[in-house]
Every structure is written in structure tokens, then in C-alpha cells.
Length: 347
Image (cartoon, rainbow, N blue to C red; front, side, top):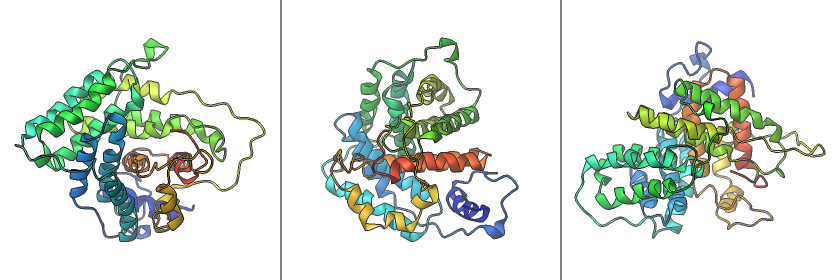
């Protein structure tokens, strides 16, 4: 990908994020090709919050969280109408296929102050180490952000159900750092973002080796953005409490690679995912809606459960904070191969 293509891709995506200085002084406005923003309506936030709250256990909250992330992916980025429509299709499909989980709650009085219960419930789930790959942070960050945009959804039953996911995760035994001296907050959120990308780049040796099961590095991205977003929303102390667990998360060891494994020349890239052809490909759409099968569909219906939406939403909010664009391109391939190659297993 040459400089002009990268600028076109990145400006189209990052341009809607309002991150100042994403390209420093290197971007030439004449080389950009911004398009009219085509976003989704707020009913997707309402449905996403409902889908999270009606989940039977924290894992099933993935479906609603994915809908919320899909909404923000389309709303915060300058995506063309075809891509937005392509993203909307699998969102609509999961809402339709899991209609009971997205059924509205009975009407009750609204109290916007109840939103603050979400970050309060998060604290026990993040103290002392890593639990559930950071999902309590990820879910709380998304749901708090969404509720601020649709405060009329702040009803007691829904809020209590959302808090229940953090309470459930908080009962898990945390994974801790072996070196206790390293269990300290990052100097700032930028240091945490840099540490995440430094960790991701370690996995470049896995490119083209689908048979090697991946560590849970995709959630490293969503975990990082969730902590950054908590700080942005006004909870810096809470975000810092999550730094120890984050250090555990990004410190996962690199898997062993067999010396005889072939490495194909074709490698995944972010621009391939953020394209009309990817989202409107009939074969992709069929694959996404198939049930899990170890032989030829080990990734199951991961797109509907929201993993790709959450990664794309989070990743696009982070890449503007990394000055080394070659590092961004390499990390993009590492992440996107997980989603573009159904043979690749792991988080």
C-alpha cells in the first residue's frame, strides 16, 4: 500500500474521530478523499443496551455490545453508504435471530443518575489483576457511553442488569503479574496505548500461520480503548485501577512456532476489511451466519457476536495516537488476519 492509499484509508476512517494531529504534518489535504458520513440511528444504541442487559450471563452480553460498537463504528467514522449498509446487515441479522434478547424492557421511570452505578459496579471486577480478558471494562465503557447518548434508557431494571455483568466477573479469581513491582499504573493513557501496540507487534511471527492458536490479543485492543474511554468520560482513578489487569493482558507469552510452518505471501490488511467488497460479499455473509464447526468454521458467528465490530471501533480510536504508521499497518495485519481467515483460531 503506497502513501496515498494509506492516507486515503486512514483519513476516511480516522477523520471522523476528531483526533487532532493524527498524521502530524505529513498529510496533504489534496490527497484525502473524505466522503459524506452515513451513520446509523440511535435505535441501535437502545437495542444494544437492551441486548446486553437481557443477556443470561456476562458472555452473552457480547451480542448487545457488538451492536453498540457497530453503531459507533459507523457514526464516528466517515464511511460511505455501501460500507455502512454492509455493516448494518449483520447487526440487523443478530437482532432478528436473537429477538427475545433484544425485546424492550417494560416502561418504568427514568433516572439519569443511575448511570453512575455502572462505573461503581466495575471497581471490584478490575482490582488486583485481570478477569475475563477485560470484559467488565469493555462492557462498562460501551454501556456507559451509550447511556450518555440515550439517557432516556436509564431505567432501574436495565441498569441493574448491566451492573450484574461486572458483579459476576468480579467474583472470578484475578490473573496477576508475577513481578509485583510491575503492578503499577502507566504514567498516562498514551503510555498504555504505546504498550498495547508494542505487545501486538510481538505477534508478527504468527502472520500466515493459521494452525497456531492465537492468544487473546484482539481483546487487548478493546480493553485498551475501554480504559482510555473511561478516563475520557471522567473516571481517571477508575481507569488507573484497571492498569494492572491491562499489564497482565498484554503480557501474554508468544506461542511457540514450528520451524516447518509455511508462510503464504498473501496477508490481511485493514483496508481490505474496511471496503465495500468485504461487507457486501455474499460468501462472507453466509460464513458469518453459519454455526460453529471445527473443520471449516472455527470462528463461529464471531461477527454477529460483535468481536470484529468491537475491534474495529476500538482500533480506529487508537491508531491516531500512534505516530509510527508502519507499526500501525503491521499491527493492522496482525489483527485483521484473525478475522479474514476462518482457519485462524484464538481470541
